[in-house]
View 1 (spheres, rainbow, N blue to C red):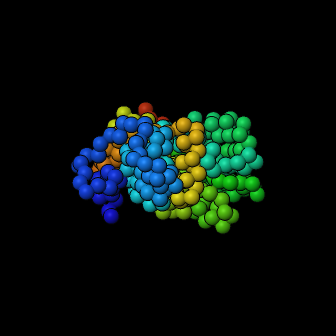
View 2: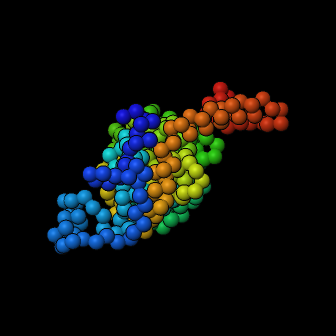
View 3: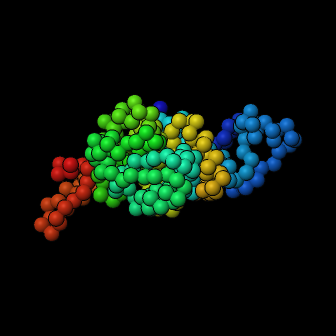
Length: 289
């Protein structure tokens, strides 16, 4: 499907002979089963279904299916915030003794989490200039599990050359995790350029209305299953109403981003002409590296 069509129509309600045009909010934390055979079938994934709020509801499934489709991912896991997604990713993907190479100018809370909590969990992180691929490769070790970068850094919008970096890591069997919160899949889809996982703070462009705090990780099905288990056990699950709001917001992602990018470029170009402004950071400007 066309990206605009996916954004407007993808990730709809759970299967039914008929359905509401606007999906309902599944504001429930427990589900009722008719018999123990059904319980067993759902728990063992022989039949589709839901069991408990922390494990997910129809609203979570719709949001995850929608963003996974927009990113071209096999699966996705929704979490209570961008930092909740980072927590589930760290718990689900890394083990004590693993090494991580990270962009030096990550979102401040992410850098602090990796440097502090990550170290306490036995995961060592080296922070490097991610715009310099040679610096990233030089920092790799035999124990390096992944490289963590932002598609556009927050807030200075520095860019990582993902298509050039991805092959360097792929031949070494190292994951490339890209936080694409500042781009959204309407602007850049890291998996199409060789990344193995993509993260989002749903709080930003995907929900787009300033009324949701949420996060999401997307990628291959197998690591997403491990990250989902970590999310469930750590309790970083997203509420169903927030999942519903994020899905509602994503419907207009394509048209919002078209207008926002055009407006941002106009503003950046205008600000760059002002004598009182010493520097403007925007990737669309010719002055941007």
